[in-house]
Image (cartoon, rainbow, N blue to C red):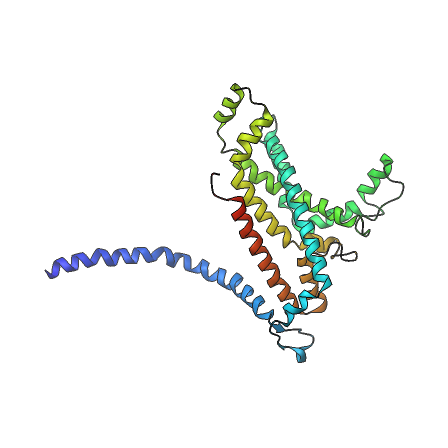
Length: 305
């Protein structure tokens, strides 16, 4: 009887040890995530409830909800929130449209397709700061390529200050970020198009379906989840984008390109008001979380409807 019990408990213990093995292997990664993500996030929430300015330590201390109350009456916050909304809508919609067009072209069979695919994806591999340097040279009022081309074509009479003119700066920065962001959609949509069965297009062609109708009734429905996911990821990315805007304009002139992320960066680097900047970060996090959940629910992500 004892031998039977021993033989029965042996496999159970061995199975328990085996079941723990994956968790032990994942433990180092979990600890790294906790150290490099959870702690900073928790620290931001903590600082949002504090008066914290390293240059004025005598004023540091618990603030409660004072920082959040200040946000409600902050005109700079309202302006940056509006700029962020315009920025995200412009970037995501334009990147999706142009990315879809490029993906459709690169999905066709033609000579040199591999080369054109590589060239189309190069901007995505460049950092935001390097992209900013490139476009600052293009937009330069005195020696910039854009002014030179427009002057030679007779489209303008005098060089334009693309990054210093309050009426031109937002569109100029949108174009620079657009150049860098389009490949993300092109890559994602092209990859998804590879999974669409060619039999569907052949059947549609036999039935006399035009390319436009095939795109509407075959391609788009098949790309639904990819479009939802990529637009959401890109919206979050653009909402938090700092490097390109900060390098090109620093949020100016007169706040025309000051998004919430730039406002937070300015509070950290210029005013050293980390408590108030952290409070704005918390509000930004809540806004993104709510919009993401509503968007996924409204778009019925993951369903076949």
